[in-house]
Structures are given as C-alpha cells and as structure tokens.
Amino acid sequence: MAIATTNPQRFPGRRPGAPRRKMGTWKMAYADFLTALMAFFLLLWLVSGVSPASRAAIADYFTGNARPAAAAGPLVDMRPSEAQRLITRLAAAPALQAAGDSVRIASTADGVRIDLVDSAARPLFASNSDALSEAGTDLTRQVGAVLAPLSAALTIEGHTDAFTPRDSARSNWEISSERANTALRLLVSAGVSPDRVTAVTGLAATRPLNPGEPHLSANRRISILLQIDG
Image 1 (cartoon, rainbow, N blue to C red):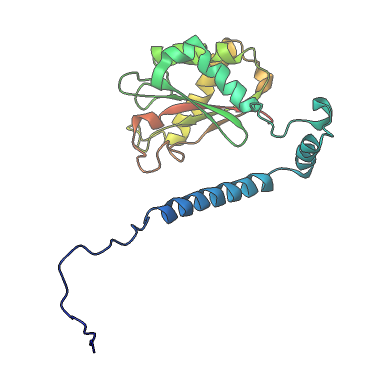
Image 2: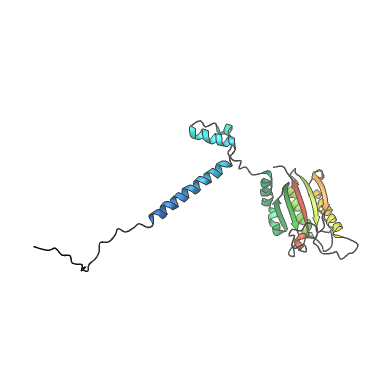
C-alpha cells in the first residue's frame, strides 16, 4: 500500500508578484473634487453680490427670455466716478506732470485733494513765512490755470510743519492762514472764480501728511479740495 507523504521542504524560487497598487489615482480625484468645490463656492459668492434685477436678467438670458439691453440695464456699473475722471484729467495736465512730487492728487470722501508740497529740492515757501518762492508762485498759478475751466466748488487750506516759528510774534496758525490766502489770490489771478471758493483755512501743523513725522518739509503745503458729487 502506497503511503502519501508531504515534504515540508520549500524550494527556492520567485513568488508570484501581487498587482501593483495605483497609489496616486485617489489624489488626483480628490484634487479635482476640491477644485470643483472651490468653483462652486466662488459662483455662490458672485451671485450673492448681484441685485435681484440683475439675477432676473441672467435667468432670462439662460431661459431664452432675454430682454433688450437697454431695458435690462448693466449688471455692474463700470463707469468711472466723477472723482476718478477728474483725477485722470488733472494727472494728464502737462503743468502738473512737470511739477513731479511737488503736486500730489488723491480722492477723498467729498471729492479730490490737490496738495502743493514743499521739498528740499523745490522749496515752495520762504522759511517761517507765508511768502511763496518763485517756484511756489509759478506752480500755484499753473494749478489755477488747470482748475479755472472747472465748475466744482473748492476750499483752500494752508499748512505748516511742527517747528516753532523763529518770530515769537507769529504762530503757525497765522503763517498757515496767510499761506492759504496767498494761494487764493494766485488762483483767482489765474482764472479761478472767487464764487467757487467756499472756505480759506489755516490749519498750522495739525494735519501732517505723515502723522509720525510732523517736522517734514512736505508738511509745509497748500491743499486745494475740489468738492464734487459721485
């Protein structure tokens, strides 16, 4: 009778290899999911800022019931504001471009501010005086010629730095007020109508350009504020 036996001995050899796992596939799928999710939330955020009338216009467009463009109106008003148009016009004036850093133009809550600032390279004022230098006089007249054709009301402010005047009989309040009045006379002589001027004010050193550096020469300046709507 034959007896079957087993041989526990293992013969050397290569074992069958397991299928190679694709480790990167799930990462790509997850990245696609996050991208789609981000796009979805971005779409929700954009839609939330659209007015009900604009949403209705969008819905009409995709359902085939689009109204004429004139009736639907723009979804977003991209027209520049009056202040932006004025800043562009002023910045393009050759006289103001030639002035370089001596003229600074910026928008404000009420309109546009033009600062004529003093610098070591181009001093606009005599030290401790309301008198404008030759450069300051020319620049103020050039600005007046640019502003003359406009109709916007304006205010004029005079400023000083924080140094105490050498003349003890005068204060920075007086010097800044005199600077503002000197600028007024020059602007009017350049064609600006006096009827447009609503205030002429001296502010001494109370409003420096940089609050942390009240002694800068740039704080010695004339500010012209154009009051506009929109």
